[in-house]
Length: 266
Image 1 (tube, rainbow, N blue to C red):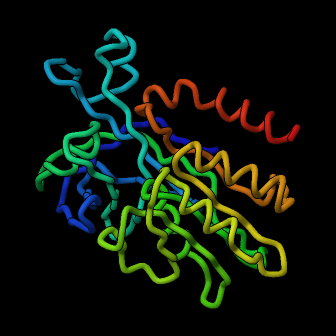
Image 2 (cartoon, rainbow, N blue to C red):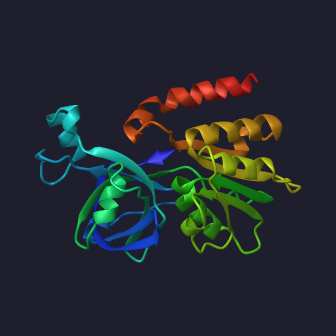
């Protein structure tokens, strides 16, 4: 999976309230010169949020910061998908739940002219042009990548793309996306949609991302019950209930290793 570490600077051009809990921040400016997302539809950037009352070197340089400041003063890193890049504009969609978290509250308060530092992009998935059909599933955190992938498919491509949201008010006007509404455990509606799907004939290419427990259940279903090979799957947890990104990233590799071990021996 490719990822570039050089820090870029985006300047807020505008914000858009897409749904009650989703805000799009559009970045531009000279700080994006040379930025490219490459071939991936799940391209992501690592947003850097400076901590209050900490003086950072200018220009903002993560390497210098990590060499000169203690870890507890480093900027907070949050990973977000690139919804779209083109014509000098970088779109990033944020799920916002009041004052919860770091990135969401920042997006809710962002004003034209505000600066945002980030590294990247990374990425690893694009719809396989040789597949007979495509299956995508996730929650709000996976919506930007799913939307980008659906838009990248050629006309007439066969796709089933399920996105779980809280309710009808959170749906966006995105052709090709099928909305399922959350009830009970987070991710269960998306799991049920995939489990209940009658798979068309032919080779499928799968993209499943979102909350880790949801992804774990779907990975087991697709590998062990549907018999899909690893080469047909792009599947990983973007986040985990009960953990912020710092906590999730520190244990993500071990979580994935244990999940794969459990499911391969099931």
